[in-house]
Length: 79
Image (cartoon, rainbow, N blue to C red; front, side, top):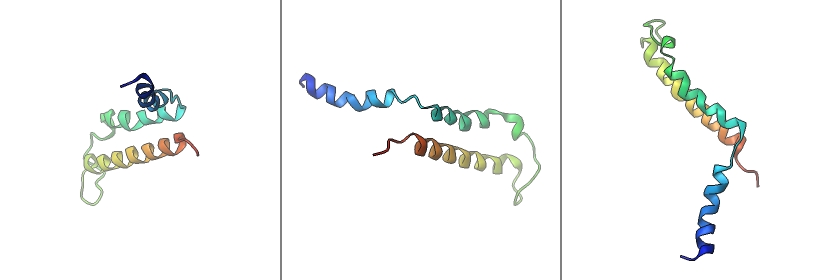
């Protein structure tokens, strides 16, 4: 491969690495919240017969999807 080809392939990776949007900090939320075990170390309240542990895990999934969507929408490049 010649040098121009190498530089052309590396350009997108460099552009992504320089994305320093403050919105990216929001992505720590779905990582840290599930680690706070006192939040879900209970049997009650039950929702639909499911203990708190199980339905709260589903809410963590919704939190992760929502957070990722918001960060993506706020940081994508406008054409």
